[in-house]
Length: 401
Image (cartoon, rainbow, N blue to C red; front, side, top):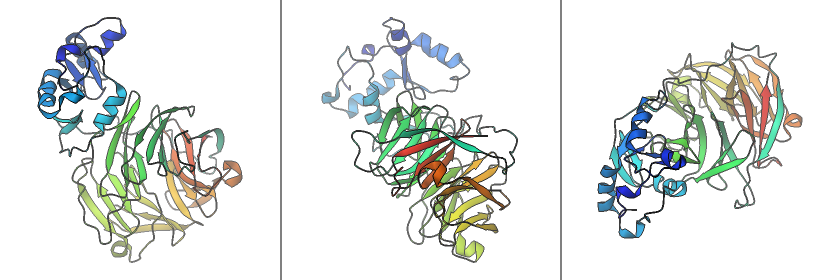
């Protein structure tokens, strides 16, 4: 690739129309090679007018000095999505305002990962007593190359994809809305938390001090930036993150071992750190998930040792506590909290004022003991199951009315 000249790269939109026209730029957001005409048109479109186009000449000069001839590309070869995936997931350390492009650091204008339309609009708050959920689809996340077991620790529904965290196989797996497997990306660390940032971008955290940003592009899952920068926080016991949620303004990260909550802004800078024993006068034993309200910034945390759900303000003051058998995962359905009650093997509804409403789905409805839950951008409920459950390799999809 390093020895190939710019003239050997062809414009991808033109190639689809049967034309062989030399590419001049590469769009970082779309991951696409463009000629001069297509570049101009790309920047005139409303959907892509803010995209970053990188001159291929600039990149080739950089890559020629950094790479050896063994990575050269034949003149007749076009851009391959698999190669882009392996090159994009690099070990190069990024700084803020920098993007990773095939192993080279190319400076671009620093932009927020949050789009203008940050939040999915939902219907008026539904009466939690009338909410109903019915299973409409169930699909397996197990692939032929997987180990015997699948360990689903997170599920997320984006605008056009379902992303599943499989920690047993260290993979992020992507499926379409019908449950058809599309692609996967290898995980470096054990990952426990996953949250939606915008339509096709999401964040993960786990057994490292890093919050990773990912984006869906064409056929694969890629790092948007390698990390949200400046997440360098000292913890009393360790720095493992067990849950994360983005509410359109803040990232809220849960640290289960030392019972702390870290609040970050959109760029990953620490806004506040809440030590539960200091804030509430009690050392709550957190569960595996966390949720932050988009309006009040109140934080809702499943607590395993105390068997209940805790509501705490962004300043760290406890508001209410609602008992449950064994709270685990948590999501929000049209203004009502939906909690995975691991002990009761069900999904439970709680209002944001702490009122215990009722069970939404039990083990008989689901077919197994739930582990994680997500209310998707499509208005459907997605449920993953415990490693000890017969349903451990399944994702259940439920319609909510």
